[in-house]
Length: 273
Image (cartoon, rainbow, N blue to C red; front, side, top):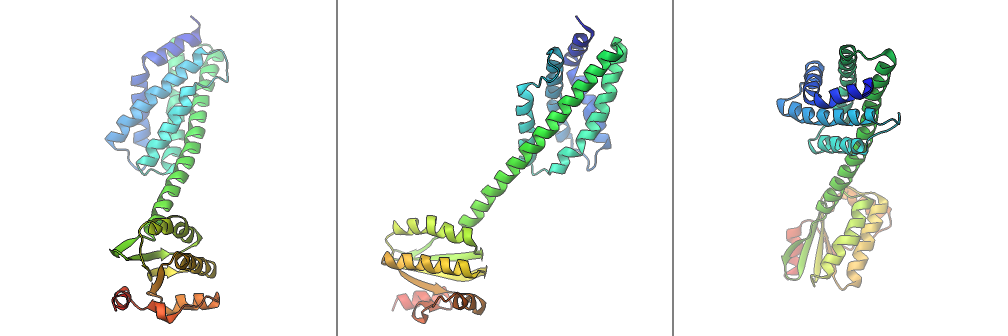
């Protein structure tokens, strides 16, 4: 058995105690403080990381990276995203990990009696493992964060135009927040098809919860109203504040006063007449 293979076996056999030493060092030098639960999770992850390190040392290809390391890095990122962690929480711990890992590797090399060349080889190996881990974790974190933001955005969009049935022939769509192109498209692509299956006679578009719209969105909403009319559904607009009316006027969109009311209550009372 070569000295490097002996070192690799030592790492594998003592992965848990070495990982514990790394975790304690990082926890003692890291701010904010790391909870006991996080320490146990980190301990498990470092044991696996050292396993990848040991595996890479046994492979004669200097550029060999275990496939499991890539998956491990993605899981690390997933855990951070799921727990609401920040990218800085990941990055700040790597220099500390590198420092203590380097000290441990050198200490083991001296205990085993590795040559200078072999010591350089195993030091290169641990740094390569840490570099790949950091790069893959950061890349996966950014991808997962973007995906999470996209999913949240889609959920917010769906909540910005809920369908509220009042009775069999009337539904209210309370528009909420900032109506932009994406939310106008959501109404066109998702809300209208749902309403088409409900067989209603009146749709009340309530703008009382809308913060602002622009000319392009006003035109889109006008087109949405036209689609409802083609479907034989009467459109009633409520809650338009003066500034929103100004946007509609500046966009050359005419709003008939016969189908506009200050409140949903007034609109419902008018339908009942």
